[in-house]
Image (cartoon, rainbow, N blue to C red; front, side):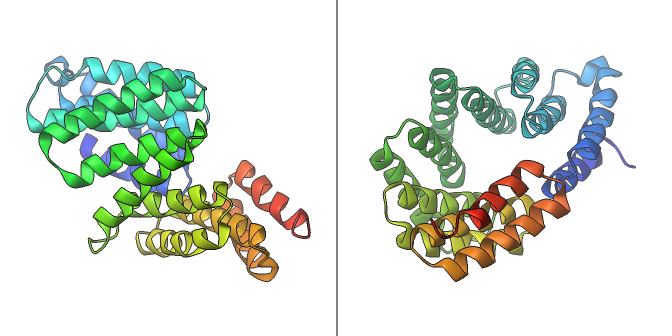
Amino acid sequence: MGGPAEQLAYARFLARHGELDEAHAATQRAIDHYTSADSHLYSPPAAEAFAAQAGMLRRQGRNVDAIGRFEHALTLLIQRDPYAQKVRCRILDELGIAHQNIGDLVSARRTFQESLDLRRNSGNASDVCQSLVNLARLEVGMEDLETAASYADEVVSTLRGTPPTALHANAEVLVAQVRLRQGRPEDGVPYAERALSVNQQIASRRGEAISLYVLAQCCRAAGMRREAEGYARACLEVNRAMGDEKGEQRAQWILDHLDE
């Protein structure tokens, strides 16, 4: 079905719908194209193919494998033109998340900061926002909620009024999570609601599940039992449809602890 670019587009489509095994297979077909033609191996498209597969590994919880694949992808970027730099930053984003997932926060911060520095030099506000989202999530994990909130609020204000993307949804849900951690769950609800709306507009089932989960968390913490139950049940169904057992378990936990 098409060339490597089409295979990667198909893989992203499958991943958005939670079909990670099929998405992994699609990325492998793209990789096979580049490894069978050495003249194209050291190029941004080839790096993107390896990085896409690493992303599938990360989503499957295979973070150590993903880190190795991301690092290999970076070695294929020998160019310094704007396109190559954009690809490099995207790979650094994913690499930082994988480091964060295994608890290596020092490497995660270094990787996110490298991406941010490259993006600030390019002057692209949207790309800078992606780096700020990554750093904000890191600060949440390190319990620096004030810094995390400042990053997240900057992103939301910068993106308001622009066409909806996954970055918009990520920023909105991040602010909701920070408000929840700050003991202000009712303030987090409208942000999570906007995240849910954006994810539904862009047909991201995984993003929809995350937004529903955060909404259920905020409503439960704010004493909005009926709303929390509704969002948790919706989250359970979306995760069940995707075959995400961990997502189902998280949603079920909220349903089992609504009155606590």
